[in-house]
Length: 454
Image (cartoon, rainbow, N blue to C red; front, top):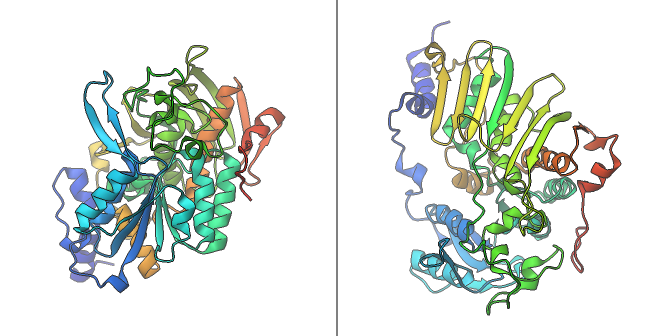
């Protein structure tokens, strides 16, 4: 049946963003899509509090400034104010903490009304806060997210979702039971390049998959300019270091430990395998329709580790593979020959997607999808999508269960690499490691008192 003019026009409008990206044309969006939708009555605004005011936290919250339906009313961080320097400690590259965040909010809204807090529990006790943005180190996510859900606050939480697989399961169950809105900071799910790639794979446009290769961005072990300052030092004035550690093991303060470099400690995160793996492995899950499942086996595991005695203990170089029950194989390296991104390789062609890039070969495959093809949930703005879900009961682009399943892959890879395993088998239905009690014990880990997840 041929399409009517109206149907054809709707199809064109729905695909204009994707087609523009494919062909290299600029996309023009209506002003309403960018938050310029006129004044919103204060009673109709979603009030938001920022928990975690480091570089990532303050960058993310700026996206909510562009939405007139949002009012940021409070900021929270264990640090009052600090400066970040370049690697030579000669040039200041940023100032972070709750006071700089407060100034940013007040300057944006031209007010003096933004409140500051050192303890996230004070934020969750506020009746005037509808939602929170959590941008703390990974070892804090589970405690803060569960507490926020029980306080009936909607949650935008940065990736990686959790420090352990058990934490991720607990978080997902708690969010589901609470009924609050959740958005994971996996913004690639709101990127046209990754959505188009996933749709092409779902519709078999490159034929039967031969393999998928993933390259993760090279990690930078000196994000805060202080990686060489590893000796124990006095805790700076204005930093509640004990609260920063929270559930993590006790450890002496040193400048190399904080401000983004916490990513290179297993006590706080999982290195680049979890940091960027949370993005690219998530897109693989999406493309394969495995959002609520996962692989069954890990193999070909190799890693190079920091020298003994190094403060940082996650793997800077790694190479591993995993396989789904249907035989689909994914090979992951710290950097592939194409750099950072995902290469879907099929019998009829290949699709390479990365941030700002979608390369489909051969050229004849570069066609808009038809009306009968499978289409995936479309979000053009990850942050507005979160507010849409709060105010209009819309679906979020990155639900917590999807994030849990994706980061589980990264955690399992880290566990197998740390244990120097040749293989690791996983049951994605029961979420259990098979025939390896030592690895199974790593699904969870103790929390330093008095913190507990219950």
